[in-house]
Amino acid sequence: MALAADLLPDRYTGAEPIGRGGMGEIVRATDTALGRSVAIKLLDRRYAEDEAVRERFTREALAVARLSGNSHTVTIYDVGEWQSRPYIVMEYLGGGSLQDRIVKEGAQPPSRALDWLEEAAGALDAAHRQGIVHRDVKPANLLLDRSGRVYVADFGIASATGLGSLTQTGTVLGTSSYLSPEQAMGERTTPASDLYSLAVVAFELLTGRRPFEGDSVAAEAAAHVTGEIPSVCDVNPSVPCEFDPVFARALAKQPPERYGSCAEFVAALRGALAAAAGPTRAIGAVAARPPRSSRRPAWLVPVLAVLLLAGIAAGAAVALSGGDSSKGSLPPQKVSVSVKTVTQPGTTVVTTAPAPPPTTTAPASGDPYALNNQAWELMKQGDYASALPLLENAVQQLQGRTDLGTAYANYNLGVTLIALGRCSEATPYLETSRAIQPDRHEVKDALKQARHCSG
Image (cartoon, rainbow, N blue to C red; front, side):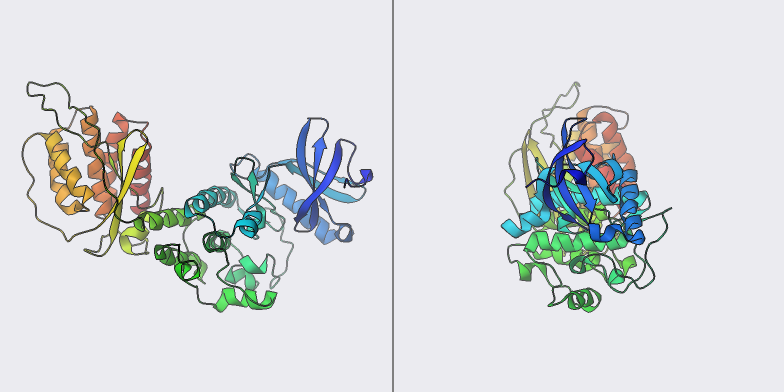
């Protein structure tokens, strides 16, 4: 049923209620001037006479307007006031929210959940870089477009640098089910608070329920402060237990103990999922030839073994050090290293093998492409220590060349150094590989990983 025509300026017609957000009602309407559907948030009448609340509502508009243009953040088109009711005009996405999905479907497949979390993490990290803390991250504020992409919405209680605080010390803002411990205690919020709330959302997406639940708002808020973090695989046996150390860090009671960014948290989840994949049968590599020479041996050059420890960021530190990103060494015979092997266009396999203790395999002499192939076989088995001298020998012989075999050898050496915790040494070899094949995303991802874990 359409709303009364006097609620909005004549430019916006056919307003239909579609939900609520914070202190206001959200309606869908048509912007007749531009011919597009929009979502309009109207401040409730009962709040409109309260100057402090009106100021907070305007604050949301200012906060989100600063973020307009950021990827996966709902864009604001207009801000105004009509018949003494402030309103904000935003883009209309049309796909519902993550809350809708959880209510209808329960726990989500990990791959889908991680894609959504990655998109939300990017938007939140972008807001944090601009001095804005959301303070109310929850599934209802993570909206989907018609293609299933996530956008962060409703910065209604956002804390923005340069905008005066509207709350007093000890005031609790946010939704109790997703409050960080510091919010529950009325303390200052930071980007780490949003990260905590995103971790609660992640737990719910993967298990179908929140990590802390109570019979009342007060009980649930208290659980965030003192409650023990449950195991995800206890709550949902279909979810791998490798996620547990990631959630233990993301839901730490003290903000400094959490991940450094939302993206780092999601990357750690990806690394844990990869580590849980288990052994998979490998299939043949694509044949490639070295540059023409008097010998021209037809060696099979592997098409890249990609260390999938963290997706893009800190997951390698978690996978290699058992959850502590400050450690860079590989505990012998204890940690599984996941390797994604690209074997032919559109085909990948993931293998997981225990990392063996260091060996003293002597570097073989001979053709550098053959050395690379020998090392690649060892990498597939998780024996990076034995692969290292072979790759060092191969790369030394290939200095100055620009063929794909050289790119592969440098790439494999970089990945091996990362696996052995020598991240700072990996960068120059990965840079060499990228210079030869600049469009390979695997090389770019490995470079990001090397730079992150080397600090």
